[in-house]
Image (cartoon, rainbow, N blue to C red; front, side, top):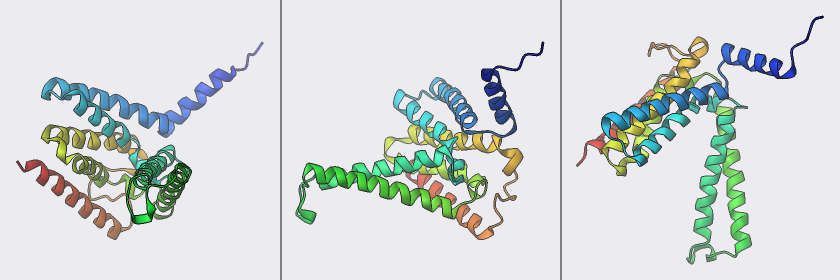
Length: 226
């Protein structure tokens, strides 16, 4: 008598096939988490990173593993990043309208403050997501070799006031995190040859590399100052 595979086995086989043929969200975040954890452990052992530096570096590496898929219209990283942007603006809006000031007759009543926060969240979440959906192409510019260094540079600039050790840690893990994604996708869209662009838009790619160079110059100029 022939037995058909159980539903659990079929689900496992499906996910295994998807994992092996094309890296998905679970694959990217798992690999980024593993590589980031190993890198942070090595940094703590070799360079003496403290808990704060290690935590920030791990977040930079883990999130970096998802960054290239911001150009996928239906990806989880795009939805998550939109929610983060919306939440950040909402918190800022609530803080502003609940503070005291003559402009806009602040502070606002509690209900108006809540509505302002919700409105800011949905508005900026929608704007951010729609900009990426309309201005990017999956496995295009976001899979350029410039992106790891741009992402690491943005982390370094954002944490410029925390000290050189933290700046170097978040820069390094940011670069490593994005690279894990690009390497996993290399069969589809990525080449280690920096002259092979991830997009046919030479103008856009050139602007991306210039922005990357400027961000990293700013980060390491700040890092080198006493």
